[in-house]
Length: 232
Image (cartoon, rainbow, N blue to C red; front, side, top):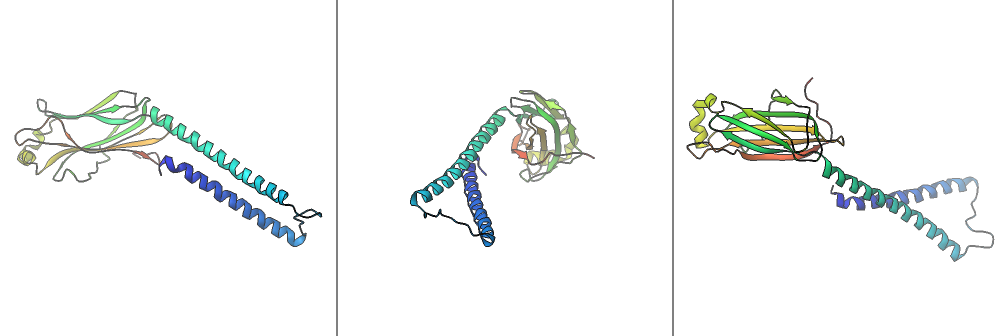
């Protein structure tokens, strides 16, 4: 749910809670009146002024609750904005193929203002026919890291990419098969939230030679509800 509508949800909750409170109070008074009759008005009779004062008092209580909820929502929005501005953001800074060394290199960068903690990087080199298919990386391709500071890099490389696949070179140049680097990077920010960057890149050819920059097929950054645990 978007944060901009959270105030309406909180206000609705206030109204529901207020109505529930009124209903609960009415039930209690009804139960009490079964044992002891309640005089709603003084002996001299009810007055319009007294009724208005009672209604005004109830409305003031409801509006006070609404003001508290709205103030809490404003603080939550402010806190979320501050965390979003300060937290770590992991992205693919560079995904390239070096033909002189026959190596694919992936450079990860923390674009945030604070360290990315407890990194778990799972990236796998795969030979596939459909590069646009949502591919899954093997958990055996885990690269454990501690932390990456703000504006710092971590580079991974895969050597002998094509030399190990000479039998597939014709298919690769015709783009009937593709070499892809696929996987994910999970990390914590300093506020305790867990995030994950899902990555899928593909090596492409112009028909004769492979291009330097890999195509970014998929790059999705999301927050996780729970911390991901990898391994036993």
